[in-house]
Length: 267
Image (cartoon, rainbow, N blue to C red):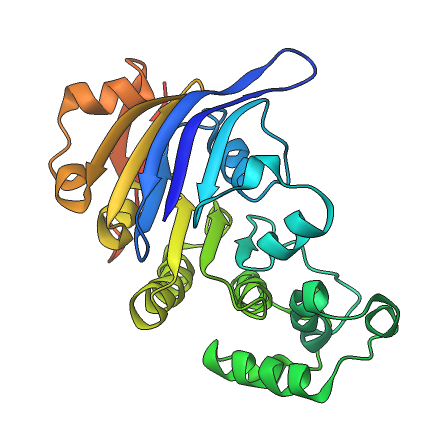
């Protein structure tokens, strides 16, 4: 279980990005974080795995406060927290296979891996992961040669190499078209349902939130302003919508595409 207690993040320029946020994520949830750009979604996720240090608060995961860990203790804890990024964060000049193998860096000796010398068992695991994501035929291509959807599957595969118990996905489909967006989220859903992997994913599109989430939280100006279930988000009232997105926001939906994405925009 993950418990976020009074989490606050203030950047050096004084920006209050996350403001006294508290919530709980039971094991096996597919939690989606919603809110406009700048609401604190990315900062929240990056605080959870300590890519960003929180200013105040606790991040209790399996009884351990990640906010207090440093050095080897933090590195060992982060092994079990995978991260999928909006812009993939791959090494463009390296092969797909090498990119995926970097997910084992937390378990491997530094010098051999810097020379791309990974243990045989790690290479076998990488091939199994490639097959699971359906990209084994891309293994020896450079990452930059792949489409956006393929690159994001590489990002998921790399995170899976950590043997994670928790997967954080920061706007993983923001740059993808509707069909690819569903494909990527279906992979995450499979991991959630088949492996029991806890997923925390930030999204903009309400149709995707309704389709894939088991629970939802909403942020506005760094504050937690909404909590609900899949059923709740499907029945969201106009007042609840405005609480998250503001009076100036409207809902639009492109009904010309099957499986369209209901998007939130600001007027």
